[in-house]
Image (cartoon, rainbow, N blue to C red):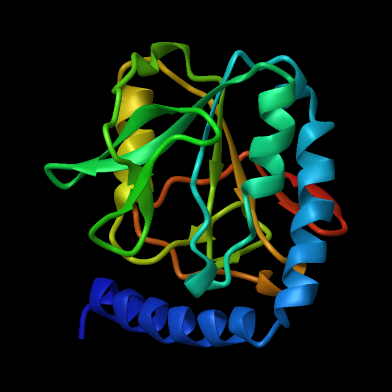
Length: 198
């Protein structure tokens, strides 16, 4: 078996394990930790200085870090909010305001019912979901590669927003199996604080 096939198998097993680990956190704890994470996010210089922030709309069924408190805080700060929409197999950015009508899309994620696609060239920060992260700044996503392709596409256009993963601390692992196309993070925010990668 070649190395790529081994990495694929390792990642699949790790995804199942980390999803189970995340779902083992009580809803009450997840909500409290998500509020702590929001507090850390809002204080980041990259966020304070940002004009536009791309962030995911969290999926309760996936036990993700909730982005609802971050959305509330960023709206008060008058930041332009963008959310991911999947079109033709690619992740693109749509404008978002709290209260917009949403629909459930292909993978259970919420998307604006009538998406308004925006120019991504002024994107300052991307807040990403993840199942696991390691000490080198790599993240384990859900295995579809949407964010890796999105970040690569932006980079190829000379657009380099700060990439910040949102995670509960117990999702940290020593080292993730990494493919050549895996795009690293600049930082991870968890309930206890911030980990930056240089």
